[in-house]
Image (cartoon, rainbow, N blue to C red; front, side):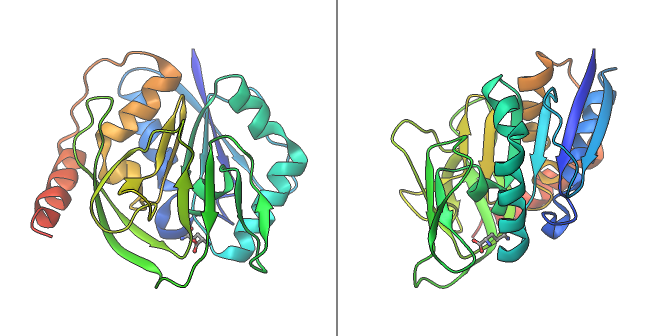
Amino acid sequence: MTLEIVRLYHDLLGTYGDQGNAEVLIHRAKARNIDVNLTEVTPGMPVPRSGDIYLLGGGEDGPQFAALEMLKADGGLNYAAAGGATVLAICAGFQIIGDSLPDSNGNKTSGLGLVGAHTIYDASPRSVGELVIQPSRGGLPRLTGFENHQGLTLLGNEMSALGRVLSGVGNGFNQQEGVWHGNVFGTYMHGPALARNPELADAVLQCAAGPLRPFEDPFANALAFERRSTLAGN
Ligand code: GLN
């Protein structure tokens, strides 16, 4: 099997090194002898419909809406997700995959609707800083990341958050952070999130590649441990 990873518009959506999530997945897949092919989708290119994992990063409002419009017009990401493809969407990407979000003029617009989530901008100060969450599924440990967003995201009742906020803001409602719905993951965590959280990387990988043989990466583990322990007192 060759695992097809599709990185969407990383030149528009790639704040704080979110594009590195692809490199982490490739590294951890290859460590299990899984062949990987990475497709870079740039503006104007059709989105492949048969990918296994699709990656979206964060970005400023202008690039975010340019990306949203292209994804709506193309339809490839929706097609792949409906067929069970795995999706990891960070920050602006997380907002894009929801049902609605404000456009660049602040008016409500529809998102891709891969998850039940509505993003609003209110008068709250921007959410900026370190984020620590406790997932309740998948045997995941405490996860950490860096958040920087104006939008706050309310999940629909049928949705599960990625985790419960221990410190930071996250979605801004009900102590929830991110979403994990079927094979679709959304989160406000930059870092890149998968570099800071190797267990989350494996959870994403496993959705697409099935059960994984054990792999310990001391460098990745040390980074995850350092961030968790440094932030434990916050
Ligand atoms: N524009 C969005 C917001 O501010 C996303 C920001 C980001 O991706 N860092 O809420």
